[in-house]
Length: 218
Image (cartoon, rainbow, N blue to C red; front, side, top):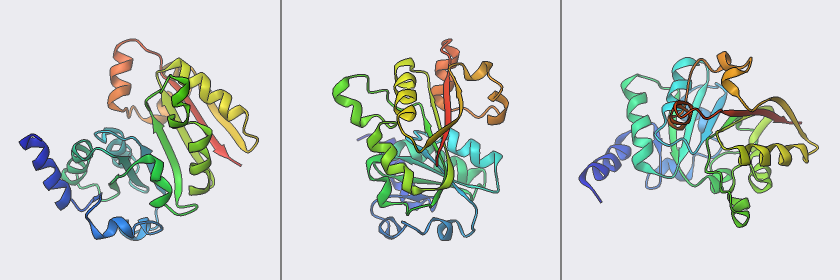
């Protein structure tokens, strides 16, 4: 392990906006996120947040909400956590955990809004259950969301986009509110205030169209 990575892990231990294994709060955070933030603002969660640019961007733009980026890689969330501290964004935090275990860290109805941003498309049939928009994951997200809570899904991958549309269409309790296969040519582009993930910037610069779906569970 490189010296830089070790230093990042050490800083994560010190950064109070990082919830990770080894910290006492890690085992107690479920149902306690608003207490963690010290307010009753609605909570938005970004899955597989990577280096956290998108989570921080949302926190920067929407001070009346709390934002949590979730990723298993400590060296990645170090970037977002230190950025949030440097910018004095007390409404931004990071959780180091497997997404498969999300229901171990959030209580029913604790999440107001969920972002699934550029997840691994897992194109092989045998990996369907690992797709973050598969029925397995949707079944886990649903009780964690408050009633009417929104889910935002963005991808550059046409296959995953089409798969997700099919899965959502087959779920009678899901209502699709927005759907486009070219987000930056859509009427919704300005709603996101230009906030992009690292991968979104990369794919857009390569000329890929960004697909976007917003839905809620009834």
